Amino acid sequence: GAFDLISVAQAIHWFDFEKFYAEAKRVLKPNGVLAVWGYGINELEGSTVNQLVQDFYANVVGPYWPPSRKMLEDGYRTIPFPFSEITPPEFRMEVRWTMEQLLGYFSTWSATNRFIKATGQNPLGSFAERLKQVWGQAGSSRRVVWPLSLRVGRI
Image (cartoon, rainbow, N blue to C red; front, side, top):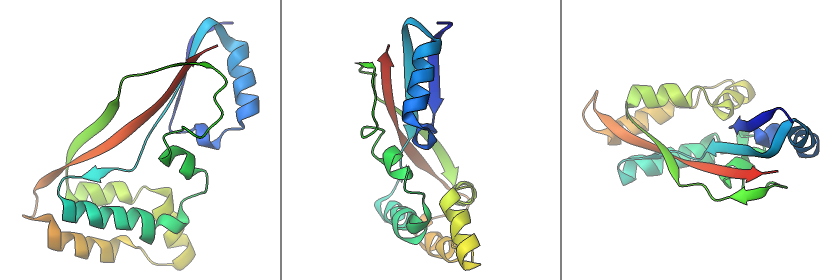
């Protein structure tokens, strides 16, 4: 009963729900809040570029995402959540990135790195060549948006 808020960012899909929720209920004050959030699949400005990015996510490195990633893709709507829910406002993250920044981000994905480990090849090489053909002017930036999903509740 010591904390007003527990926040879990982009991680609850890795947790043992039963153990975590028991501990959360133990340490939250009466009327305390648990806020669980994560960001979904990014979308890019420009339908052709976005289609290429979605294909890379789902079909190129898609088989290398861990199964628990599906909970995050579903906006955490499929996880058990034994709290009195509060409806949060909608949020999203948005940046303008160059192609190089986007590729740098994709290089951090666990699925990209699992692909490399499994095949010995980096999928970003051929993807970058295809992306360069549709990106536009070298050095230009595009809007990148990630929807944020929240589950918020009180004990």
